[in-house]
Image (cartoon, rainbow, N blue to C red; front, side):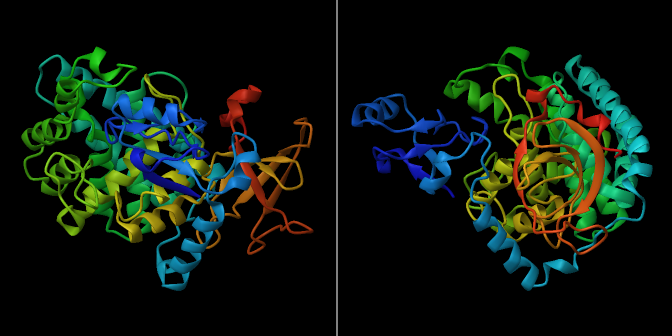
Length: 410
């Protein structure tokens, strides 16, 4: 299980975990993964100005592969409690088959990428924001997630290289609107979340590229400049969409945090709007599961445990548990290794059983392709395994040269 500790509480023998979190939210987070081996190492970490770190408290998990599932049992317990408390009443949309929605979702995803790229370029060039294309894309995203959210969610976590800001904006739009739809919000609210997610980092278009892509720690002055981007983005949107108050506020508040440690206003708890709280979760999950110019990605299962470890401090705990239930610990589009040794692509989440999605088994134990076998690991619907079968871990498909787009339709 992940736990955040102060550097002054760090001890020899602790195992530091790289959670993938950004220095923009955690500028003093020490994240060089590995064991703490000496007091001298701790002193050096303190001297470098780091204030906190995430550690793994489950010693047994340190013997697992580098792609191990952190805190899975703890997350499962929380989700079981959420289900017991009535969160299973949230909307589960499967009106259209994934195989039918995915070709449409591919076009919507590409169109959203193009419309956001144009908006970012125009703002960077000092032009007034023309949000019409982004508004149209947001409406199409909202419509797609209402039909079958797994299609766009699956595309958004594949993360092809390059164009980080654009891919991230589309990803947050998909995640936020999917979550809003799952919560049963109105179609208009889901569209607003799609717009806010698409444009949440618009203010970064006003910042120097070298600052956005700086690989090392930011200076205090650079951090203060970067931290203005939510306010800049909200102001740009307010000019182009003066009547969209909920959207302005969501964009302005996507870096606020549950305990008041966020920026730019240090809002606490319910002072942060619903849109702000939803975007905060979607933004962090989308960022840490994507390759950034200054940071590698982590896999979705570890990302879920990372954001879960930040409940109460950074995120609304109730919303966070429902977000995990919405996507599942293993989101659609993930390549997973099963307890049988075979590998499968997740083609549908199971909100009632987040650790047991519906999958298509596509590789044997030696990663040799086989004829796809459809299976519901929960046993609730459709084909179920002859004997209990669990997901062991998410596999990084890039390490095997696999193009996941080719398997989502199986």
